[in-house]
Length: 68
Image (tube, rainbow, N blue to C red):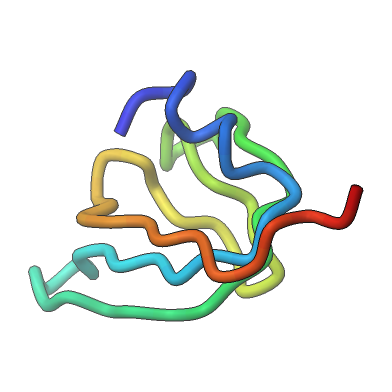
């Protein structure tokens, strides 16, 4: 996932699937707060769950749109 693609999810609740360090797919419903560079990890989605590296993300599905 690119930085620009990831920015589209800021402020949204999403179901994110990513590969953990063993290569297994993890899925979690999270609220995306920001996309930023984290030293030693690289570009990451910052969520209420923690940081998720963009290069490990398999899929993102929006669960709830942000309130207008």
